[in-house]
Length: 155
Image (cartoon, rainbow, N blue to C red; front, side, top):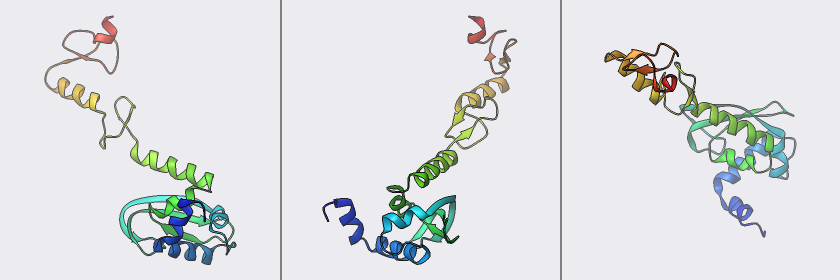
């Protein structure tokens, strides 16, 4: 085996258990890299403690479904990486789900923010200023100022 990644894979006991379970629920029973193309990403959950099909306790659960057999399995964040090398669609779907889980939108301005909560950092500061006697800009809905116009509208 010339590929060091593949060699390391086959020495890993969790990978061995993962591949056994995937073969059990797949049409392809010989080649893992072919079998994983039968699977698609369904959803991701976080915070519930469960078990991956390889037997490891996990917090991040990725539900995958075999499109040929209809079987659904739960894999963890480490085992999902074994699928991503050969299954490009699964990789794209998982990456999109992780991005959406991390991305939040400010209720006031709509900007993307990684902060959990209803507002981005800028809007939190602006709302605090409004509570402390600052004025809402006369010309735009988001401007906060000590004067009549915010710095953007005053230009």
